[in-house]
Length: 290
Image 1 (tube, rainbow, N blue to C red):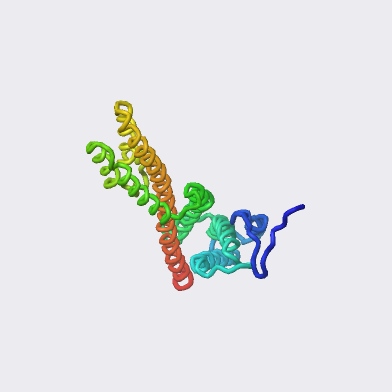
Image 2 (cartoon, rainbow, N blue to C red; image 1 turned 90 degrees about the vertical axis):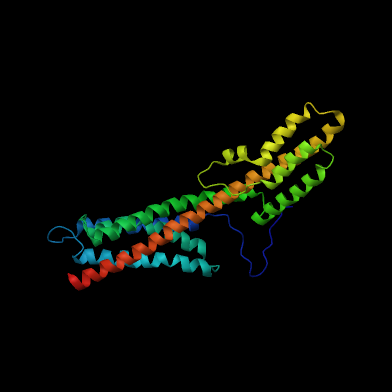
């Protein structure tokens, strides 16, 4: 008999569709349509001379681009009010990504390919930087969270830290029958555990310098010359140290990935507000001084 999943009233079915492929790439298709129409209008419209931002088409593309930038900035607000249905967060993010990239075409056509050392080009340059950082963010958010989930093995960061504390308690108990020189090695592994690696320091390098990893290696080597009575407790301690070393590696990788996502936000969000300020200055200068 075929098994069927039962959905409770008011409960939405779980979807594993990513935000990039949302609704069968609905917003990618919309973005491509916007680009094609804009390019066709740009090259078919007769401006009576060279294209620039002061023509009716330039103003139209400018208004569309400015409105789109403001709308895209609302994603940060929308993320705090996510709701199911037609306008859920996944759809909003998908639209943010694809429609945001259309600005490269819309804003460039708005300028008429005329650039200079002025406020208007500054606003354009900031927009390009925001879009580039956005593309980097798309890559991070499409790949890093999945790696984080696989790395955690269904544990939260708090669970991982609690498990490390539990292993430290096991080590303290298991090390009691050992010689004092081995006990000191275990205590050093507990006391000098460093969990937060630098963002640009490789995880393998952090593991090699890890006090726990070093203690496991040294005690495993000591097992070769230990007598039968000492070898058994050493084996138990080494097994716990290796479990802790593996957990530390996963924890360090998780914290590094989390920091990477936060660092991107600290760059992308302020840059977006700088673009908004430059855009406002650009609009004011056009309407009041031209």
